[in-house]
Length: 361
Image 1 (cartoon, rainbow, N blue to C red):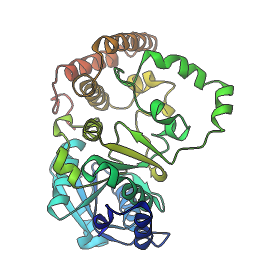
Image 2 (cartoon, rainbow, N blue to C red):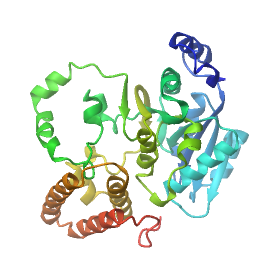
Image 3 (cartoon, one colour):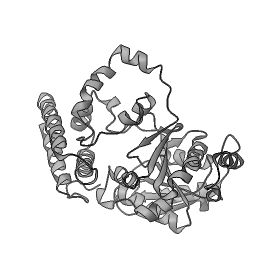
Image 4 (tube, one colour):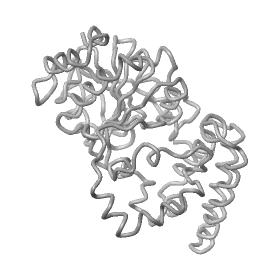
């Protein structure tokens, strides 16, 4: 099994990886389980996700049915039979609880390694073999219970792929919803032709250590769950992956992004800046008040209660960002959304988590 070579030198690890993979698709690894969550009317997306994962060598999939409108059990039973286990909820309980339930079921079934995907991710050819190779190259020095390796999603890891490095790719301590005053000069510099010319000459790194990571494309040992626990269901939606992965960082471990292991998103995320002129546009014009509420609340909770920071500096960043957000809300006639954001932040900083009665999923 894979874990028998963790204490071998890197050359032996590489030989073992080559014996596992045929250069195109990895052979089935019996203890590697996929965990994914679906909801709504997304069966077509889910089927593409499962197909790509099985082609890459996943042995078994746990699919959490978060009150899908499709006949998930029927379709998956016909297509994959016993290769898929389904955990079903009668109502949408949120991604945090769903991933928690899916991971728990996978461990019950004997999973030793977990690979997490959203239900609209397609695993690019060879991505899983790169993740396993990166994992095996790092686990001896870091430890299996403090390591996760991550696939790269170009839309979500633009800073890394632009060659900005670890420092720029991770939010600064005392940031507020990702904003920090000291980043402003760099943001202007980044938009200049000279920056683009100089940056195009940089080589993209093979791997980058990330403070936090999304579930999409995360690969890790079940020992991470034994050491650090399962996702916090109180987050409901958004931010639970950041809190979960940050436990590894706080323990002195690593979330390592492998830039050559790619995932393709079949749908674009609601808050990507590519869809808006700025982060203000995502907050004020993003689709769905429930999305904005949980994203702002959980982001504020994470920054206030979990990530170490200088409270005075964070307050400066907070007041500055909210002032400009308010100006944009006045200009665009989105004061109602602005008030929702303010209330969301207040809930997060007061530690009020869980499903909000006004935003039942």
